[in-house]
Length: 458
Ligand code: FES
Ligand code: FE
Image 1 (spheres, rainbow, N blue to C red):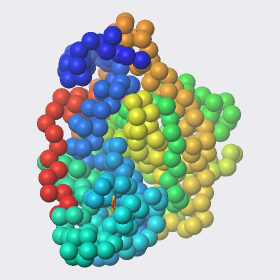
Image 2: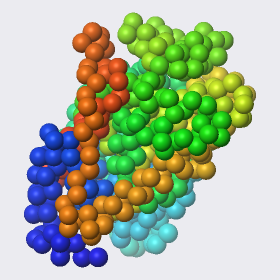
Image 3: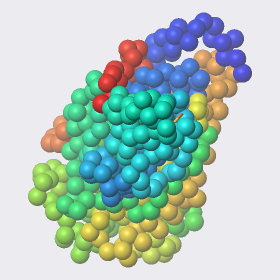
């Protein structure tokens, strides 16, 4: 379909106009529908967001040993995330420096070197050039190991074992970038010195929906639960799930980083402080690094869902591992991986505190799969409705009409007595978290300056 017939002009003009319309719509609570699927928008997102900000790529527990690696994406680019022979973590572009072929074909493994399948150039697991067939005859000896090594992400940092990378050198530190959201990540993932571990291979599946539908939903949309997920209540898998929207709160740290909280002890039973971790495990949590507000939050309205801009989301909720059993908390993180306009690959990782026994790991994994595995009852609800949004975005009728989507819920108001960072809204109604997500998106999309990746093979 040629959208240029509807929106004449070049891509730059289209994007400038779109950003103007998004900006204008922000104050009125309106959003042009085409942001959810458009070739030009997608290309600009890859260039203006995913090459320029911090993006989650892997968890350290996926590569615990020297030589371990996993193949991931950073925007559209495939990257190899390795733990090299000295134990350092590297994020490198999966393209040979000779003629560009992809050098790594496996999703994960352990190796000291990567050998290109085309002419056989070899790279160490830290990305250094290590050799080539007939190198004496062909090149008169070895090439410079750094100059001809794999391209490396300009910045790589970790937070609670989550590895983030940036292709741009011009980024603040990861902690500065996340701001108040670090406080929330500490409260969720920093409860034990042994940290968390990924329980099994992350699942991934293709969804014909835009990556932002997932990210925006997890940033603050508790409103959909009583309708989209009603089947969980009707099937008695989670009785009362249709009540949770009105028991939800919002933790907004700005910059597209926000979380939903649920008053679980009030919603389910008093024992569901700390998401309902059994008392014998909760007693082993180390809360010495948390402040009073964090501890009070975990007792009363623990964070259950959240998004760090652009495409990292979190989920921890008590669910039964087997229908009818007592709910236990499971932890999932997900990556909304863009792969084409209006199409994403959804990565779902289940994690658990490493110190907990295998029996609990197994149960928590099952609980998470029932709800949010690729065949999980909630996952299917969400992905089905998000696919409709991508279709709406490419509807000629909608485009001709200039359809804007509705973000006009009345505001709940921030709690003036909140002592934590950011804002706490006792009601999730208001779409303030989603607004922050879109304001951040807009800011990045308006910045046309190319990312500064210089010298990133050093
Ligand atoms: Fe990799 Fe030639 S393309 S060695
Ligand atoms: Fe949902």
